[in-house]
Image (cartoon, rainbow, N blue to C red; front, side, top):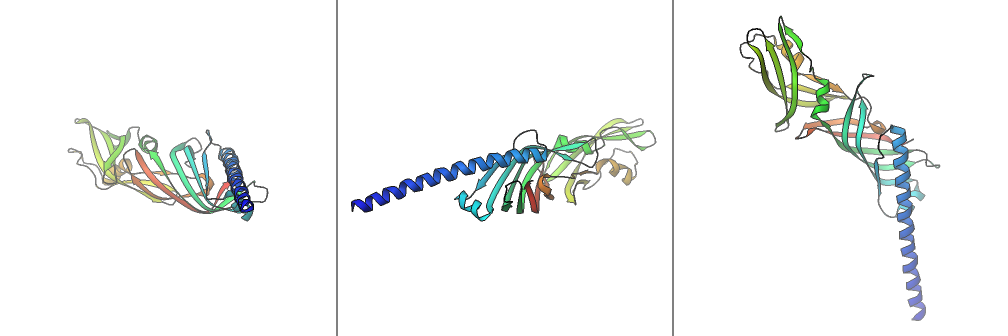
Length: 244
């Protein structure tokens, strides 16, 4: 009985040491992956990296991690215009089947899904916020974006019309994704208070697009939906580069 008791105690101690070693190892790996991701993506702040699943060390031995979560508070995404970028906030990505190289310098996920937000003031950069001619003597510009409720975006437009002066109208718009572009299109055009403007002239102001060329690791836009604080986007990808 004493020998059995001793064996059990030794097993418990060894098990505890293994758990401690495993947690220390995963913490180190998370810190290293976060540092490499910050460097490779040119991030201002260190992202959050969480390696899920237990034990970690057996996953390392197999050369593949089951589940890795990445959180990036702010990401400046290129827009196709060399002088402009758009800030993607609260990007959270869940990566599955993350295989890494033998020297741990690169890691690629078999699949990835995630969410993020584009604030309305960021999306407003893509709209025509400077007065633009829509008819002789008449200009229009977008003066605001906000939540329109029921998954719609409200676009506020200021018209400067001869005799009538400046008037502000709003339209409810649908946001959608086409390839790597977020598109905003008015569901219907407003009553312009007597101003006779061609539909294409009005839509040149109400409707606009925002290209997002390069998200981390090669993930792509999937879906978008208007929300209270901005446009919520869903991303997905395959063979996504985590680091390297």
